[in-house]
Amino acid sequence: MTSADILLLALGAVAIGAAFRVVRTSHLVRAGLWLVVTLGAVAGVYLVLAAELVAWVQVLLYVGAVVVLLLFAVMLTRAPIGASADLDRPGWAGALVGGGAALGLGALFVDGYRWQKVGLPAPGTAEALGAQLFQHWVLPFEVLSVLLLAALVGAIVVSRPET
Amino acid sequence: MSLALWVPIVGLFTLALLFALFSVTAARFTGPHRYNRAKLDAYECGIEPTPQPIGGGRFPVKFYLTAMLFIVFDIEIIFLYPWAVSFNALGLFGFVEMLLFIGTVFVAYAYVWRRGGLDWD
Image 1 (cartoon, rainbow over the protein chains, first blue to last red):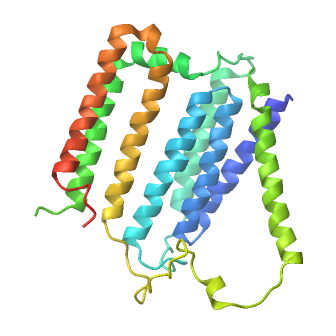
Image 2: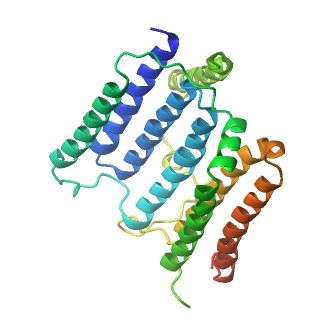
Image 3: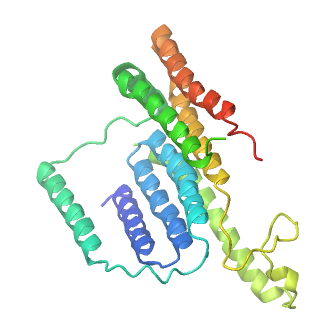
């Protein structure tokens, strides 16, 4: 085992443990904060796999912005900040779907590669990613701007009633 | 493998973690523990905390718009970074591409502005 393997294992364990806390805690705010740990560990996994830009995008967007939006959503909708006693829906259905999806995807992935050794691709630097993105993925990139437009218009429509 | 490049950053994180742990532990053993109501108040930048209505009270929905604005422009800036780094290789095509992208997001910005989304009250 190389040091990268050990790092990947440790980060994976942190991500899964924190993800378990996300779904088990009855404090919605704490679930959001545990999500920070999960997403941060995933960013670490990206970093170990030499996907530098993706790792920092993960930190900036998911840890920085998406979690903030989630916490805002909690603040806007659930007034009492504290344990929510009404989170009593049985968890087996979710556990079944989540565990099944994870096992299925894992089996597919392991079966796809078996015991072949796959070398790490070139590091995902900003330069390499920029060249790929702006030369081969132009259309999805431009469609994304329309998605952002729709998101902002939607936010205005939801939060500002017609005056 | 460029992992070695990140060793100083990992070292920095470790140092920060150790410093935080040390400070918290040292404060527990060396600091005086005298009860004071102000110490247990929520910290709101030195301002007296606003009394909350019974049941906590909900936050105004305006915060949602702020968060959405932040996310949208965060995404835009993240795309600007790899674009700027590979700008020379992309040429005019990349420039026009980014102008179109920024133009579309600017339409959203103008819409938010016109609808009064940037005013707090």
